[in-house]
Length: 179
Image 1: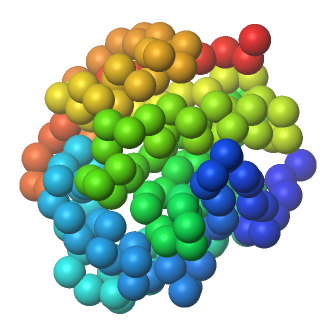
Image 2: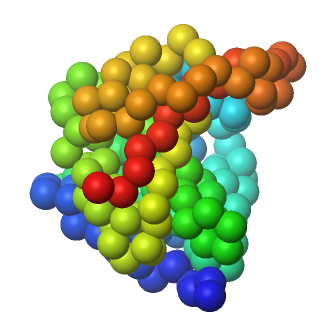
């Protein structure tokens, strides 16, 4: 049975994970306005707060349906990234697709290495998932290495699996089963 996840928060050490809200649109526009942050993502860099509000709306609808959950990652009250489950499949697989991003200033500082174990534990525990998956755009080596450090295994490459920014993209599939 699906449940509304729109109020679900999570504490991960010094980071607060809170579902994306309308009030986050300005900071989200700044985060996703950076072309280096969105380089491997399926969106163009944002140029307006209206575009950020579309992402917030998508995330809120996803959480309300129980089909996913996208948190804003906050440190000392400031949005520095997002993470969560872009998809949750309970009926035919008990699996979730995790995704994450961070502002450039937080890269290489172990932020997601600290946060993702909490997200994974929430998926396996609270959501009852058996399998976590991550899709990594070919070339995003930092993300691939992070997932491997967290016990994910690369299971293959889906050739030309995604289409955005006017071209097809290969994506690496990573998976990790519940312990």
